[in-house]
Every structure is written in C-alpha cells, then in structure tokens.
Amino acid sequence: MTTTTYTVTGMTCGHCVDSVTGEISKLGGVSNVQVDLATGAVTVTSEQPLDADAVRAAVDEAGYEVAR
Picture 1 (tube, rainbow, N blue to C red):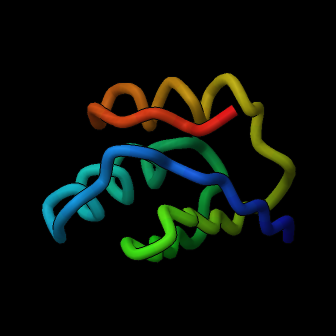
Picture 2 (cartoon, helix red, strand yellow):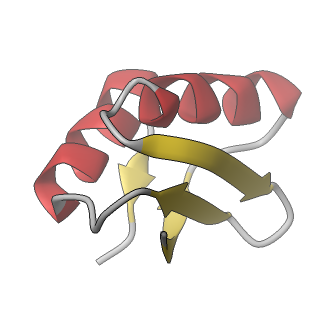
Picture 3 (cartoon, rainbow, N blue to C red):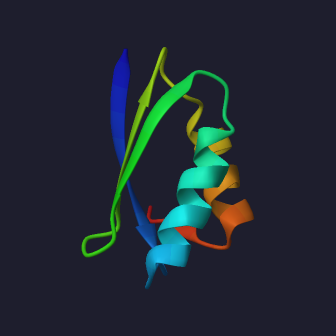
C-alpha cells in the first residue's frame, strides 16, 4: 500500500469534498481517499503509486486544482 498527500485548492464545502473524493476514487487501485477541507490536504491510499498526472486530471475533472 502507498499513501500520498496532495494539496487541492478551491474546495469550500462538503460538496467539493464529495466531488474530489469521487473522481479520485475512480482511479484504478485507490482504496481510500481522505480530504481535510480546512487545509486542502487530500490523502490517497492505493495499492501502488499513482501517476501524478492521473491524480491531477481527476481533481481537474472535479473542478479543482492540485497545488504545484
């Protein structure tokens, strides 16, 4: 198992959290997604390391952005 934390900008409410969680959860191998709305931290647990571009694309699909 691998755990990686990303910082996502633009989230302001529970709906934002649900959107980001839902899109990242669609990525293959993801077993858990935890979002801290206050800090923008999104912690993703997966079977193996995820492609950073795939995570960025999922967050973008949800309407938000991974901080550089």
